[in-house]
Image (cartoon, one colour):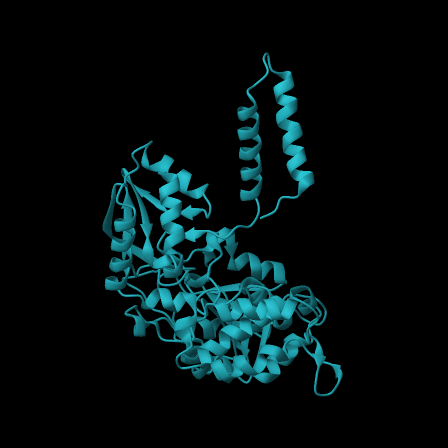
Length: 430
């Protein structure tokens, strides 16, 4: 990352001013070292690529899903010059940006129509603003089970989004048990929606009961009330294929008869940050007509990356080129072989291989650990926290976790093609 001469000069001036204010003139090398340290700290304040050694595949603080090479190339092609973002090349007239991914989303999910906004919370907000606000501006009712009024990362709370949209929240059931008759009793002439929400990063187990999607969709049809499901992570494939517990897919929600399904683009889909809504054509058309959509719309980079990712999902052999699914599919033997190669290269360091447990992350499968292999480094200089700090401040930065006197770097979340960079970063930190 180039800082530019103006920023560098500002740091040089600050160091020189501090030196002039001191009792004695500092050594020139000390001045230079201080300037370089300030510039390095300035660089870290920007957005940098890092090596994720945490074992969390979809780490929210580290940007969630890494993009496939095809998606990155698509972004470059779309934003390197002019694009057909809102231009119909066949007709020679204005087009719709949503048409760039609409057909792909319909093919991938089986939905009648689809819409893309800038994130998952925006998708829910647009649904609520479209269907739960009366023409006179008054609030209409949205019925939600008590055990689905979730808070996810960053303090995002579903009740707060409901309030911001102008909807009136109607809670039904108990924390641990919700039945279909709870929803039925809550229906009134002011009911706008029946809403299901993904539990995200928590689970309630034991003496529990909940209403399935098909049951709720049938009730909605009988009552003439649309049913919406905030599916959160947005799986398009059964994760049981990768040895994980089954995660409800978008296709399953639609097959249950849910009218609108909202989900994220940067979680289990493996694409860019985006909020996606798929479902019935008439319902999507109402959302397209909402003036709020303009404030939530996505640009060419997101559309290009999302389209490229969806094409990989639609290719029977393409999904493994999506980094998230490549990470899921890497075997313990492959991880161990990479670890042994790194140990051999860095034979002067106190390195061992350790069994590790990672997680999918992004609010998905919080109770399902992923077996993995980690490099366990005991720094010879300073304690483990100091060693982890040196890794974070290196080039590239490596984010690891500390257990006792060891720094653990989970290899599942490090791309194999970057093992050489990881080795260099470890050698420098040591």
